[in-house]
Length: 185
Image: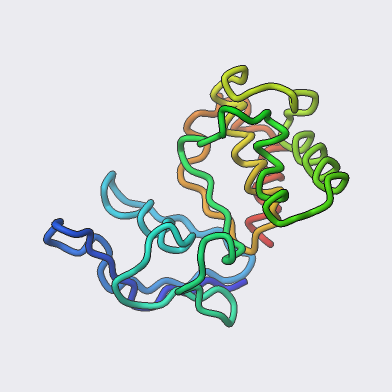
């Protein structure tokens, strides 16, 4: 789906200056769009606005033919993977990956099948019973990617998701295909 940001503006209270000021952006369906800039320039803030974790002071965020403003994050069909995997420590790997599917009310058998397939896709097959503290940093980041991809979002936002992934995994064809498949959705 086409993503369009129109006149997006956000000023954090007390910051004095606008963090995001009159941002216009169009990303066509199937495209890969990168936000580049120095640390603190607002890249993550823009993604949080799109995902619904922040609300803009002005402007519009459109995905396809609908505005996302006023929709809570869980209704946007947008998934975001942060630098830090943000896994629930009390859940297993399978529980973390299937969390969003459970919130959607899918049948347990469907959740189990989708989780198993996604874990295989990100090269974590057979590790579903482990807790996050039992996984390497790279495995945790792949789990966060799997948790986002299993939801089949209309839009996938990646905030430096490969920072914690070892160099060999970053170049893995299976992982590249797993993320590219959903970016093009």
